[in-house]
Structure formats: structure tokens, C-alpha cells
Length: 277
Image: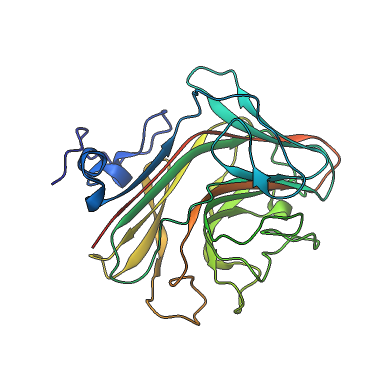
């Protein structure tokens, strides 16, 4: 079934390609040829695309197949770097900018299909209280100035949203942790899997990924630059828990600004895949 061409390599690397430690057993070509085997999502931000709008309420982003939210100081643009990228900019203190896929095609729940996710991202600043970073899979709750990250000081997750992925807390000077939360239950601050799995370096790309594997005791593993991290989350299959196992999710990325200095979040590409049962 697997038709991935590259060999498994567990050493750390930051090159532009996908991480073999995550993707070596993902049958991407098979899924592309037969959608009945699973779901595949990928964007390298090379086009064809047009001028992107940046709405102040959640809306379709004209020129790119996503929904977005941007406060008054926000823009969403393309980078002119080799290979393409998307740039989310926020210029106003305590405001935010987000980008998300509308369709909730993915679900992380015990005994459902294996899931792979990865993105290559960077921020331009790692000062305390400047950038609150978020990347992962989110439900269809409308994004606003207080969702998914609140305007509290320091910000927490909105109680209404469901999320699984990575959170660089605004107050932690570029530290990124793995986290999750279910809407309407305990853990609005984001339940920590591992508090600091990576330290951003300004204007330097990092690859952040995760794999849900029902064949490894229904565990969700997190990755940084091709390396599996120490802590994992065992995923349930029931509702009413602190993990959004019963919720459809879609890729999302964004940032909240905690300073008066305009700041940038750049994403080179992102990729998500899940097998059907």
C-alpha cells in the first residue's frame, strides 16, 4: 500500500522537504490515486493565487482557498521567497490574524485512521509578550479577536473552540509547546502535552508536526525538525473529555500580537493526511 519513495531518517533537519520520521509510512500517492483510502491536504503557496483580502470578521479570503480573520492591523500576503510562502502580519497590540481551512475533514479519535500533520513556519521576533503563535487542527468555531486566543493577559484559549497542535505562548519569548483542548470543558488555557518542545530563532524556519497512530496504543506524537518528542497524548474515543475526539478538525495557523511592534508569522507549506478505516 505504501508508495512513499524516500527512506526513513530520524536525524534532525530543517530542510524544506517533509520530515521522513513523520511521512515515511504515509501512502500519499495511493490516496491521491484513490480517495477512498483516505484524505490528503497540502499547500505550498506557490499559486495560482491572486491578491488576498484580510477581513475583520471571519470570511472567505479572496485570492486563496481559505477562510481568515484579521484585526484592523492585520494583513495576509504572499512572500516572494524561492518556493513561495504565506505571511500573516499583525501591527496592532492585542489584536490577531488567523488563516484556516473551512472543511473539517479530519478527526483524531481512538481507533480511527492514522493521521499525519506537518508545517514549516517561522516568526520574525521572539521577545517576551510580542507574538502568540498557534498552529494545528481546529474545529469550525468562528475566528474572532478573542477566538481561538483570548485578549486576556496573558491570552488563553477561548472556551468554545477545539484545538490540537502547537502553541507558542505570548509571554514565553518564542517557546513552543504541544497542546490540546476541547470546547466547553476544563482546560481553556490549553492542556499541555509538553511545555517547550522548541525555541524559535527569529526568522528561522522550523518544521512542527504530529502523528496520531491507532496502532501505537492510540497515541498522538509530536515532532520538531524530524525528531519525535518525549511526551505524547493517549487519545480517547468518547465525548465529554478534555480532548476533542468527537470533533471534525481542519488545519489552521495564526498569531496574536502582544506589543506595538508589527510582527510576522510566515508559513512555507503545510500538509495533513488521514487514512479511512
